[in-house]
Image (cartoon, rainbow, N blue to C red):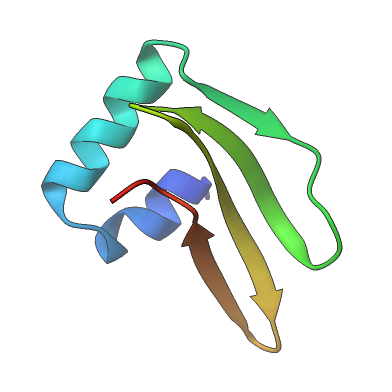
Length: 68
């Protein structure tokens, strides 16, 4: 099962649509995960920011330093 399939239900439709648009436009670049990270990517929106999914016990936690 893909990460998109697993995580999609946890995000509202506009967020998923923007993420898909960024991906299709080549604005998402996967990076090497660090420490407990499962996924790490740099995203170029209005500004560049980092998105991570980390393993915390039995849970996965998504985080980003997205501009507000």
